[in-house]
Image 1: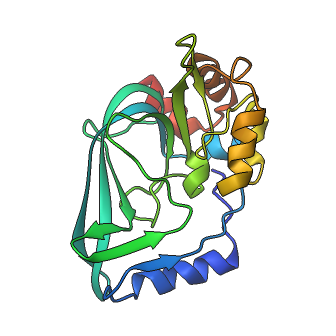
Image 2: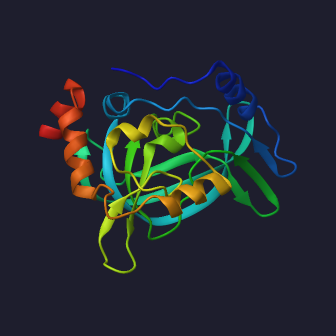
Length: 212
């Protein structure tokens, strides 16, 4: 299995994050190398199309202290690869409880009603339950004029080709310019993207699990 490449700086960051005492709002920058499409598909424990049903933050004791985590409860619409649990809830480091807040920059933020194609990896074990953090989430959006659904990257930039998953993830004004410049009519539909995912899946473990 091919796993996500994470920079040495990120590895050091993860150790630092788990040692933080939450006394004030905290923000930590992350650097993740975008995976190639084949890496994304075959490095995931499971891949699902799902709708967010509930988002909640709470404190949990982990390691040598208490940290804030966010739980994202999902309704799985389609299992694309692998064998997710019957009740799939993503657990990620970060969130807000009362006046305390922990922010992991680059980590996707979910809202109830969001529909996404998600590449799940290390859920409950890693800081992020998605392969490559922001690179493991693909929102399903709808054109206002036509009602046509299409797939975007985590930053809401329309996805026209699976190869685009390996491009750097833009933010802020740059991402906004891309959203305005790229037409959505040529973006992949969820069905197109799912078909491409299945065609790229060569991982015998997730293939066998999906078959069952």
